[in-house]
Length: 282
Figure 1: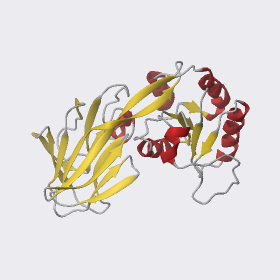
Figure 2: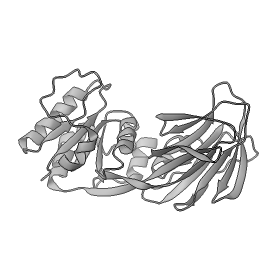
Figure 3: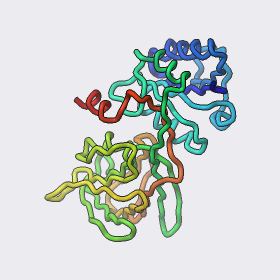
Figure 4: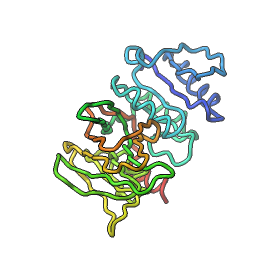
């Protein structure tokens, strides 16, 4: 039996109140406390207790994310330090991270209660920005790290190294460094490979490179990917999971490696990655 369930809804989804009430009603019948992250401007007078994320590790066993991949990615970053497993309920479109479609909500919650589930780990990325030989910022991400030009910038050049060994100088629109989980995101759209999320590798994919070839490079989990911003006449941005941004400067040095933290995810035996690929991409 669970000591408590945390729920993080995407309050911008139209049917969130109805789905939330179904989840709360289900666990209420089992005498399992439910803790809900409130909306920034609360629209509902929720009868359930509300707690900050920092306290959830003491009062909950897992967190249910109600929304889509964007909500899941945000929660993964915010809960990375807690080791709480996350279960996603998809209210969006082509969600790769959510394990449950909303039309299978109650049967899936029953499987959860019966213990008919697995807990897996997803690699996260740590990104450090070095400017003038000083570390000025660091970030966690689950999907990817993107270095890209601004909307009115010319081609940018990114000198790329693996463990300080020179790989290539990429002129183009930018670079994506993706985890296996993020390989089905922007990296895939840019021509990168699909990687099983259980693997421990990193994928380096150039964005529209101004070269006669375009190939991704897959590197080992212990490798460090370093990128030197070699363009001085363009606006260049770093984006984490498509949600957090940082403006880069000429000769900034970006180092991306496997993070010390992982995202724990809840999966069900009947669902597998290859079935998901067929359902979502075909």
